[in-house]
Each structure stands twice: as structure tokens, then as C-alpha cells.
Image: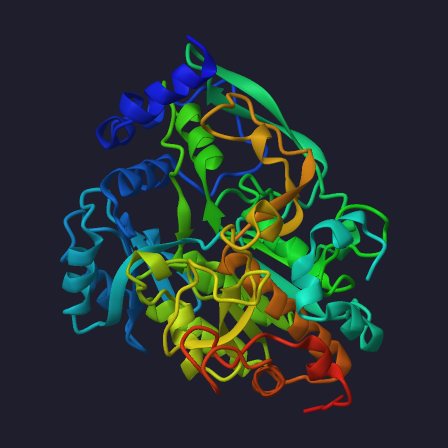
Amino acid sequence: MDINALKRCAIAVCVTAAVAAAIPASAQDPAWAPAYPLRITLERAAALVRAYDGGLPYVPGEVIIKFRSGVTDVAQQNALRVLRSRPSVASLRRFGDLAVLRDPLDDDAVQMAARLSAQPEVEYAEPNYLHHPVKTPNDPGFDQHQWNLKLIDLPRAWDINPGATPDVKVAIIDSGLTEVTQSFQFPTWNGRATQIISVPFRVNPEITASRIVDPVDFVFWDGPVLDMDGHGTHVASTVGEDTNNGVAEAGVAYNVGLMPLKICVGYWEVQFVLSANGYRGFAPPGVGGCDVASEAEAIRYAADHGVQAINLSVGGESRSTPVLDALKYAVGKGVFIAIAAGNSYDEGNPVEYPAGYAADINGAMAVAAVGRSNLHAYYSSSGSHIEIAAPGGDVHDGGVDGLVWQSTIYLPDSDPETVLAPRFDRYAETPEQGTSMASPHVAGVAALLYSQGVHDAAAVEALIKATAQDLGTAGRDDLYGYGLIQPRRALFGFGLTK
């Protein structure tokens, strides 16, 4: 049987929620030990498979709890007695004033949250919802592919502020940005047996390694940040890919520090953990996501570690109070936040979060996408929360040449439907489309403004709105917000400080 046939088998019948849930912890291969302690447990990996299999918007069995102020550990333990497994307070994962709880005996996180919320010791509880990635320099790819940077007149903006300054930091809260050039050993299923393979990783040669600052992996392990998906690297490249180095493409703010905060796991992270625990088969190719507890924790981490801007190219239809509180916390510390609006315009156009919160937070902006003809991209979510538009690409407007091209991992090396032993050490100029691609343009422009002296998130938002190119209906509208971002107009002659 060839690889494609094996993968088709995996998709059709080889993975079921029941099988994944039944893997005994004692089955872990004693011949393999991770290079760093894993954050993603077997139980979490199996839960993500069940979420995928059942189309659930949350991690089964996981809830986020905020206890009322002053409630003792004894009282907290009393509140937890309403759950089937009677978990111990000591088992909670805490960050800030929140706690994440996993009940191995109950997958229904909605009912768990409802029972906990009814307890007098609890201020609120909610499921741990899953968000998902919302997918003239001398660089040769600039003239060939980067219509997006020309559309917003970025080369003339660089005449005023050439790529921001290294003291400005932008957090990329996503699937990661590889910070080391190194190989790691991981177990995986090859269709006949579990084998331990050497998986090579490499820092993107288009992002100088010294510009990667304070990276943290919140979801996979306690080791270096590794991107096994490519989404985070593509987003980071739009914000700050090296420019005027004679290769590949350019980034908006090509001098800034980039802080990769990994909150999303995908196929390979789940596959490695399942294989390490004796599962003989393939995980579903689309498994994974970005849990909102890690999202909230990463936003707060970024705000506490000196970033000036955050890019969030993740989202989903589920609201999250912890994420909303984290956004307000970050903006309160002067951090500007660009958020992808979502790609569901032609799928009922539901409001996606955290973008849906942006209109009510001065200093956070929901970003819609346009194609190369400066028209609304067919997929770009719309609504009263949309505040600004940026290039996101549109395959219906120019074909592949109308997408956003940036450097990321060479995706055929790790395609879960065709590859048994992945590698993540090769990079390529890659076309993508989505509000995920639009949002980092805005985060990059915010970094230019910070380096120009605009040191307040609300002031950055006000400048971006005031200088935008009006599109569509006159004034703010639901497709484009206040219009297309115009970095030169925002930078020229201001130099405001607060």
C-alpha cells in the first residue's frame, strides 16, 4: 500500500474517538523520551481527536474557572465536588486569577461549566473553547509577488520610517516561529509500525535569529518554540521578514523583535504524542486548534514582557471572557492588538472572536481583507465590529498571483495526507489568503508608529482610522471598517508622543 492509500485509510477508518480515548498510558514507548517535558498529554491529544471527530468547539472535559476573590482553597475544593471526578484543587493549572480544570470522566464541558457557575464560590466558569488559525526593497519576490505592500504604499512609508526599530517588539500569538536549528527525535506511525524518527528544524533564513525574542511554547512542551504548521511563520514574515537582503520577500516592520508565543497545535504534535503512547494509526489530518486558556495566558505574557503590538490571526465563533479580560489588560498596558476578523463571509458570516470584541476596546482592531483590486475579499467576515482593512489576498482576484506571498516552512515536507516522516528545515515563498494574512499588515504598521513615537495603543488606533483610505460606502462600513490602512499617511508629519 502506498503512502496516499495509507493516509486515505487513516482519514476514513483508522482513527476514531473511541480508539484514541482508549490508549493506555502504560503503552508509552520506553525507547523514547522527549527532549523536554511535554505540555500536551495523552489525555489532551485524545481530547483534541474527539473534538475534531465530534465537531466540538471546545476541548472535551476542560473548563476555565474564575473563583470569587478571597475564596480559600478549602472553599474552592467544595465547589469542585459537583463534578463527577471530584478533582483536587491541587490538580488545577493556574495562571493569573484563572484556573484550568480537566475532568477525565466527563467530556461535556458546557454542562461542567454550568454546574460550576452555579456554585457560590465561583465567579464564572466556561468551556475551554478552541479557536483556529484564520489562514521597494531589493528582495526578488517583492516585485514579482508583493502587490500587497505596494497597495498600501509601504515603500514610501519606509522613506519616513525604514522598518521600525529593534527596541519595538511584536508578539505573534499563533502556531509558533521556529527559534532553533536542531533535530529532535519523535515517535510516529509509518503504516506498519511505530518508529522513532529524527525531525529536523531550522530557523527561517528570512528572519534573523537574533530578532526572535522571549519565545514561549504554551501548549506542546517546555522546550524551544517549533512551528509544525507554517501559519505562524507566514504571519510573522508579513510583520517582519528581513528586507533588503536580496532574497525572498519583504516584511512590513523588518527591524522589530518578534516574540513567537505558541498556542496552537496541529496534526504532528498530536500524532507524535499518540504514537508515543502506543497508538497504532494516524491522527485526523485536521486535528488541533488553539485553546482560549492558552490564548489568554499568552496575551497577558506578551503585555507583561514589553511588547508594543500583538497579532492574533486566530478566532472562532465562541466568546471567551478570559480572552476579553486579557485583551483589556494588554491594551491597558499600552499594547496595540491587531485581530483577524475571520473568513466566514460566504458561510453565514457569523461574528468571530476575539475580533468581535475589538470595536469596544480602544487599542484593538478587527481587520478585514481586500484583494489586489482593493475590493472586499470574498471570504472576509463583515459586521459592525470591522474597523480596518488590509491586503489579505483573494484567489478570485488574480489567481495565485493575487494571494499574499511570504516565507514559511515548505508545506509539502509535512503534509499529513502524503508524508510519513516530516521535516521542518526547508522554507519557501508561499501564497496564502485570509484575514490571517491581513491582520499582520496592521500589526506591522502599528510597530512603525510606535518606533515613530506614538506610544499609546488608543492613539495608534485613532491614527490608523483617521488616515485610512475610505472604501465602499462613504465613512465606516461593515465590509472595510474605516477603509484600507495607509502607513505613509499615518506616519507622515505626526511623531506624536503620549
